[in-house]
Image (cartoon, rainbow, N blue to C red):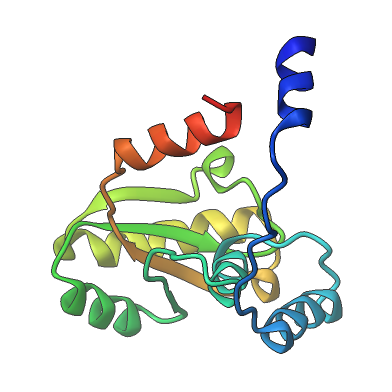
Length: 153
């Protein structure tokens, strides 16, 4: 490990890559979270910050009412993921706050199920809604390249 680290230190220095960032958007998102009393960022707000940094993300729709959820599901035409959206619930899978591979016919039951689970954990005013996303297939080659880059091979 020390040899590899020494080799890494000897490598030619590369220019730091820069890209456009919407600092005002990130500041706004962070300030909103602080105003609400949260220092952690997750869910929809984390996706918004990633977008502000130019990082591609999955489409995300925050809904508060069943009719909104049904509209989103009808327009996506794919399998869906639905997640509780609350900054007070960061680890949604630990609270059964994520439902995957849903079809349009599942949306109504899933919406009410997630809202009830959220209300058992946090006060209603701490629930921002339900995030709906299309299911996305993972690109193995992308992760293989990312992993290789991080370990230096």
